[in-house]
Image (tube, rainbow, N blue to C red):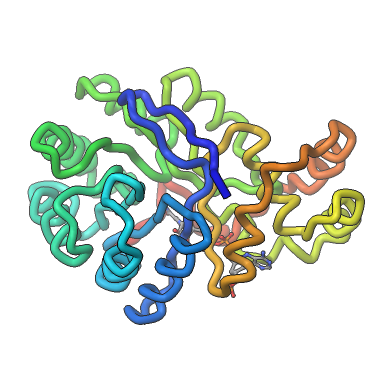
Length: 277
Ligand SMILES: NC(=O)c1ccc[n+]([C@@H]2O[C@H](COP(=O)([O-])OP(=O)(O)OC[C@H]3O[C@@H](n4cnc5c(N)ncnc54)[C@H](OP(=O)(O)O)[C@@H]3O)[C@@H](O)[C@H]2O)c1
């Protein structure tokens, strides 16, 4: 299975589907899932210091035997290390992963109350120049946070990773990212699985011989989004990659659009106020 790649404003690119690893805190479980994902064709892994699984993720990558430049690895700066600790934070992530660089390093949340993301960003620019990460980006950033980076630094983020799924399609933020040359990545692309019981998805899936999860993932990739579903079982890992050989008709996209209630997986996760350290 070959997954298409999406170009980044760095001149590099990233595979359009990656593996999400949030809430997999057992290191051996993380190792197994990452290894199985790489075996079935994933070449893009999303982790974070906050997920407490970088050791297992790194072991899975090592065990796969794949050359380092065949796997795109993203990790994220946790809130408690924003500011002067940013350099230490990436070095610690690299130690846990057993890697000498990552492909993408993200500010996990803007945390405007502590107001350290610009300071972190300037250190991340240095870390990129030193080769410890190939690209730098952000997560959960709103236009007001992106405006601050534009005014106070010379690097446009490569990626903005945001909650995005048919219930919360984030059209305004996607348009804003696109205007700035930022790739939008969908986190909780299946709304943590909660979305999959919607009867309309099963109904659409029946027409194409696809599951509700595959319909939703096709909805993401058909719109040019990068998507990082998390799955624990090899059959789901494989199925979640198998979305490139069918296309949703306009009428089906319109039916999926009826799911857009604006409901998020966690109502409290507003980037203006959410504090996750
Ligand atoms: N930047 C951020 O702030 C942020 C926040 C949240 C998440 N993320 C990233 O985004 C990734 C994905 O989000 P997520 O883990 O919250 O949720 P998700 O990918 O939307 O959904 C994962 C859930 O869907 C289930 N699932 C996966 N494939 C399925 C299939 N084919 N059929 C039925 N069920 C299926 C999984 O079950 P099993 O695991 O049991 O297979 C799991 O319970 C995370 O893992 C993380 O890497 C980033």
